[in-house]
Structures are given as structure tokens and as C-alpha cells.
Length: 167
Image (tube, rainbow, N blue to C red; front, side):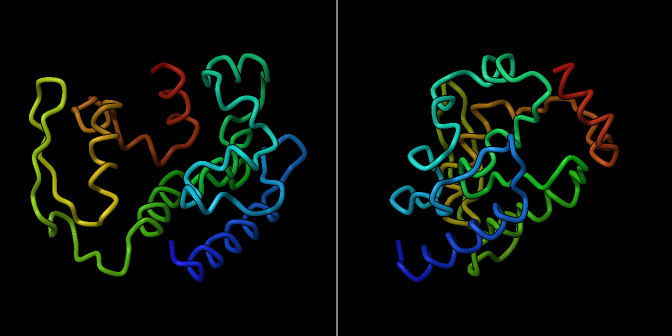
């Protein structure tokens, strides 16, 4: 990992976390993540690290009424709690833009690859280097398998959260 890049990412991350921190929200101590994991697993520095080896269901049962996104804020560089008012469309777009590197050329612009995953052929394009594992990870979780979700609900945070509870 380029030290200059690591420093700028950690400073950005620390700045975002300081602005969003509330008493119950998780955060990093010190205000920087783990550069050895490219800030994708900040377990060693997280205030709620004891919960990292539990299921999310168990953690939420132990902390009723707490927003899980708040609780695990900062556990990875892309998990940043922005407060109780949600704008899922803006957050999703910002997340996608943040994950794209300068060499991104557009959807399906990278080389096509096919994985064999549990008897299925999964074909995708490596438009950005981390898509090599991100697309397969998403597929393994069911996100690229036609879940039949009404994605128009993402514009209504209350309805989107209710759909999440039902799922």
C-alpha cells in the first residue's frame, strides 16, 4: 500500500468519524484504521471489537434500539455512519464513486471473467481491480441473483428499512 495514499485515506476516515461520532457509535482508537488491511478490517482499533466475532443478529439483540451501522461505524473504510436521517440513494451513489479508481472507464469496460461458484458459472467484468473479488462476494451473498426487490423503495428510507426488516 502506498504510504501517501494510506495517510490520506486514514486522515479522511478519521475526519469523517470525528464529525459523525455519537456516544454509542463505534469508532477507531486512535482515529485511524489498519493500513495493513487497506482499512478494510479495522478490528484492532475499533471500540466495539469484542462484537466482531459475533453474528450481527446477536449484537443487535444485545443492543436493542441501536442502529447497527452506527455500532459498526469505522469497522471498514466504507462503513461510515452519517446520522439517523438516511438518504440511501445519495449514500449508494457516493459509495460507488468512492470505490472507483481513476482507471475506471465505465460499466462492463473491463475484461470479462467467468468464475465457477458452487456449480454455477458467474460471469462479470473487472471494471476496477477490486471487482475481481467484490462481484463474487456480492454473488455469494445473493445480491446478483435476481432477488426480486422493489428497488424504487430506496427513495423512501422508511419503506426501505421496513423491507430490510421483512427480509
